[in-house]
Amino acid sequence: MGFKANLIFILLSFAFVLPSQGAVTLLDQNDWKVQFGGFAEMDIVHDSTRTYNEVIGNNPVARHGTFDGDNERMTFSNRNSRLAFTVTAPVQDGWKSKGYFEMDFLGYEPNVGQGAPANSESGFYSNPAIRIRHAYLNAQNEQWSYLVGQTWSLFGWQPAYTLTTVGIAPLSVVLFQRTLQAMAMRTYVLSNDNTLQAASSIARPSQRDSGLPNMDVGVRYMIGSRRSGFAATTSDATAEPMSIGLSGTFRQFENAQSTQTKGQDKTNTSAIAADILVPIIPAADKDISHTLTFTGEFTSGTGYADELS
Image (cartoon, rainbow, N blue to C red):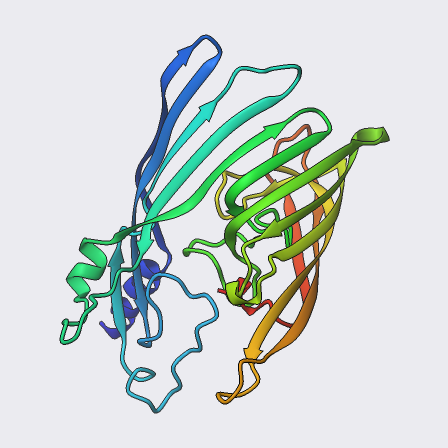
């Protein structure tokens, strides 16, 4: 009986249910198109500790011998459900423009005010707060792409290498951040279906009191003739090209010298990331069945812990 119960809990730990998902075109007139999409999701998770909500991230696991480490937890959540709107403008002089807005319900609004009660489990899971995931404008032609708004960080070429998981991303030690930014990208189409991308962006500073934005740069090389199946955290499985991405970030932080002075000490930090996607068993004519893909990420530096959720 105990084994059967544990087996059920194991199965529930991997449950990732999408009762409904889809998209519909609300307007398609004079080359303007407005689309609405999204999905309703129910996650059922059983943990042997009381460590996590829906997201694992980089939270430490409660140790054995502690109250949280020796007691279990069952979570039902639909907070990862999403709604999205896409507005596509007419093509002008070879430029394609669109606006995109996506939100989920993983936000958290604690009760505030002196003597306010703590947010209840019912309030946290049954009445979740709306959160902006993406909100940006994008214009692109065959060579250039410009983006302004909130979306994936260029550092780590996110989310192209984010590990596929049945749980809500991210897992531990994976670069994972959406942030406000202005980005420019140049795409070079090379011979034999190979592509090189170079990009730079200025992004929301990790510490706004520093007075400087974060500055990210990256290059990415893709071999289009060799592909295999891969599903990033926000997309369906597709035949992705073999690629390697290199990126870097520069940040500045300021700290008060002491409580007795108004002086500030400036600290400059930087970090690098190398990402790779290698088809071990490649796809045949973009058929991703029976393919095998290896992905990896290496990062090193200081001052980028905000991208390790």
